Length: 359
Image (cartoon, rainbow, N blue to C red; front, side, top):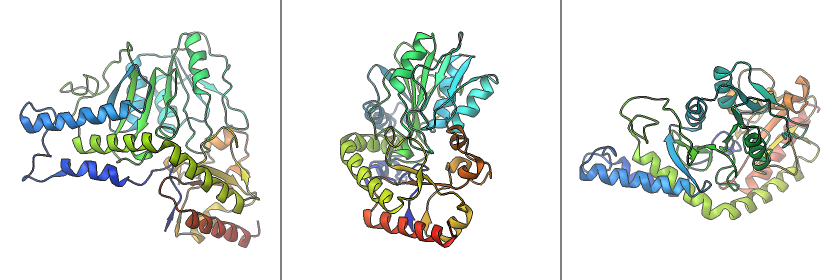
């Protein structure tokens, strides 16, 4: 099996796994202790949580605090509900975690359009009275990188907060400058599933979404997992140290894949993008048949969160594709642990299978 679905999830880094193991111990060790308990094992567990918090914070802008959550979806919901802002504006290509959460708060929310490359105009008008603007750093389906610093500045000029879903960009690109709230997820940067974080700008107060024992700075009650925190922290520290190395590998992989699939049309900007995301279309392609013919390749027909719905991707529709072209698109994702030879082989098989369909 060749894995080409890095946007859905990334492999767990060996360093992250090693960091987790001491906190997964049985009764003979004390690694299982509750980090909210005052005894010595509990204090040791609490200490590793704080080490991890510092590691995650180092990957994000200065001047903010990190709140651990169960993942980016919870972080986004905490940011939106906790901010208390009722009039919202989001880009047309946000992840469902943002789109559905904002619609629940503001059914009449404003949708900020994107151009044919999947980019929001940094000078897009923000309606008077808007309380919060949400635009993601890197799109999970087409890989476009938004001008988040300029968009944040535009939102602030309109008196709104700026929330950035940085799930696909964290650990790969510099953090989104100017944001008030940033959501990240461990399993998209080679960490474990089940943990994420919300970065909150200093001076910004949120209301809790989960009530109970008052853990996690009073914003997210519940017992933290030291193992998940340790894995998240180790993954972010590793990502920070390897950012240039990982980007160079991804660039090599990108050009190798494009060389094989040169007749396919790229969806999204070729310039403003994370190159570990390759979303392509071939008119007339039967994607379901392609995936059935290539069961030893793990790739996506779109966002993994919406796969199986049968609906054309809202992202591809937003950049102007017809239903016909949207349904003839595939997404390949690769990164740190991808092998160049395997990627070329996978692309050659994809090309051959498409040609066998007569397209």
